[in-house]
Image 1: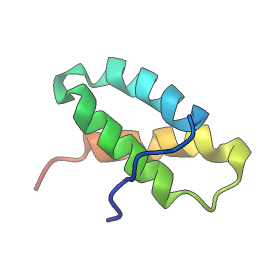
Image 2: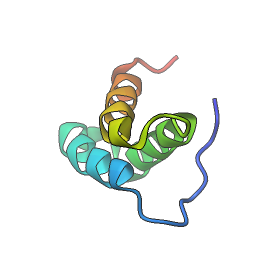
Image 3: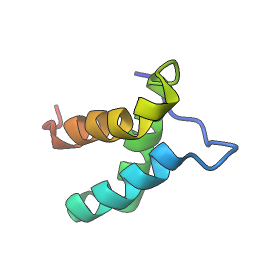
Length: 69
């Protein structure tokens, strides 16, 4: 798994996913959600820009729902 680097530019796909997923998973804490969302964004960097908001949010949601091992 690739660890996320801090973005140098504000990214709409990250901001929108953070807003929705923070409300959906308040028990996980903001820092955990930020790390997962930014990591997902980094892993999807070759995807079409128009698809990024949905792809980032879907992948992050899937990972946040997965049980910890």
